[in-house]
Length: 215
Image (cartoon, rainbow, N blue to C red; front, side, top):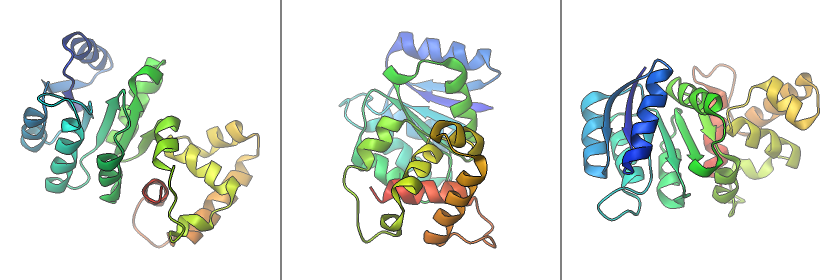
């Protein structure tokens, strides 16, 4: 798996490179600023990008802006944001592009290397990996005109787990219900969001994107 990494802290960047290489990932370029990130993404077209939000020169949102710009040129480019902050404006723009391969994890909440590596692989394969705290902040304001507004509290709970990338079995365990019950909730969610069986797309990812974008 080919990875482009954007992290301005040298020690953390070196540690991430070593970690990824230890899990059979090839870091084809590691950069420390937004301009170099955009160039690296459009030049190399990696299998996945692991991106910090705040990069030089202004340390505001250069990483996310570069990721958004790259995905406009390369639709569906998988991006995993790894940051200390939730930058809502560009995070929403990233999600609103309507394609999978999106993740957003908070650095101080990543406590399991195996789960982190799994999140990278899941995003690279077109899935989602969203930290619950990121989900919470993105859903602070809910647009009542969205079809997502019709979801029941239980269906919203299922959607929050789906956004984290959990399987039906894992969702069932987290909610203390049967896997069959989770399947029924997901079928209902797909129906309410207009994601039909005949569509040749990943309905699970589309549902998560719709849910997060409706925040």
